[in-house]
Image (cartoon, rainbow over all chains, first blue to last red; front, side):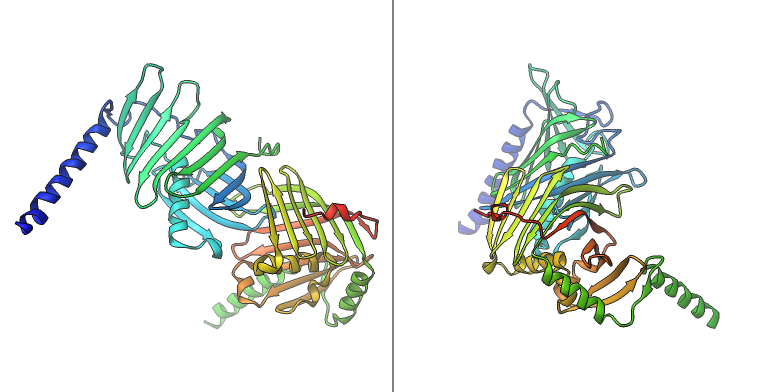
Length: 218
Length: 211
């Protein structure tokens, strides 16, 4: 009896719960074929580079610095570097529109597997182009002309669009082991958001980007 | 085979030569430079200078230029303030560190932080020119008509993880540091040029308040 419980009944019940949840989550979404609709990415065509102030809150500690984001036309990729205000490089990685990340440098005190993974996956959300790259895309619209695009590739990601915005206003990613990550994006100008905030449901870890009005680059 | 080896050696010799700026020659006896810089450091009670910082990232085709003001007062008070294109303030005073940036303020007791303490020593010693006396840095000296050019190579493993070379330009007129350049292992570098330098001007202690 015990063997029946552990080998059949419990896994079977768990499977049923999972399938039910999955079905519920798909409610209101309709499948879109790739290429049938264009969804504006966070950094749209024409973006070259931006300089941001960065504020990182980790537990009770607050850090500040700068971020440089540059589109690399040769590789069709994006480079992101985190620097201290005095110029010391802390993190640098390259991201593709397919959502891949390659970390080129991370400073010694940040070089922990979990930190590298979290920073890479968070920042990769900014550079994914969901209209391309063979994603499974589901669309949900509401009465206000706003809509949610659900992408299934390397986990589940929701992109929230409103008609007034020149790009997604929110991105949500659910993933193991860090739980839900929410990215809030606002004040789009010249194909890039002026404000970006990363929040993490299970971690007291927040990253905020505020664009610096650096006239030499504008 | 010998020709190939000779060619490789020549390429390295040329590469090595590039590290030395044009118009500079190597200084064999460096004791008088060290002495002059130390004398100037002893005579310097305060420094009030503007600075321009150039950050070069290898993947960028343009440098990031920031500007600010640096104040130093003996024995260990420092105010480093970036004013453009972002605001950032760092004050070191009597073992305390205050950092203010967009929306955040950090206070650190340097006694409890080895890393900040080392950074404190590096900044204060660089401003004063005392960096030449710091241990664990091998040095090479060059000179032109108006400047000494000094390359410092970290020998300490901790520092070598971040920094390839530190370069200083010291003005022969006043034996103070005019340019300070930190070159990282990747080739990225930060160059700080000190301009409109005022030595031994009165600076109120309030400018170094960390409370």
